[in-house]
Figure (cartoon, rainbow, N blue to C red):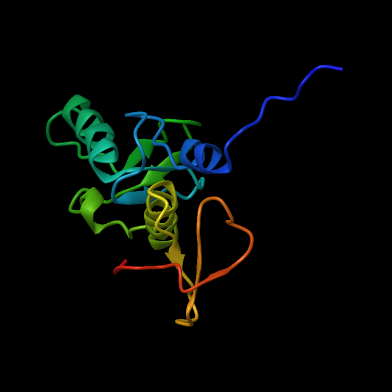
Length: 132
């Protein structure tokens, strides 16, 4: 019988939190209407490149998603900074980093439980030390 490859759940999560433009963990993520997410800086590069290619005096407001090419709208007077940050992804990146360091993530209900990397599915009382 062939052995199944063991995959670390934290590594799997990190892969899902990776920007497909820079291949790093998402930083200051912005999510497009097609639901693909990118680092703010990476998305700024896409917008800047498209705006630089536009004929002078003809501002563009539609830009392609780097993954699926679905168009998203960003008015000429707006920047990527004006797009809403994806706080869920920010929290997932932060929690993954805490789990990866082995210090645990505090319970969201502010109780004395926390979750550690080795026991991510079951609470460990009083194992969290420090601020998140």
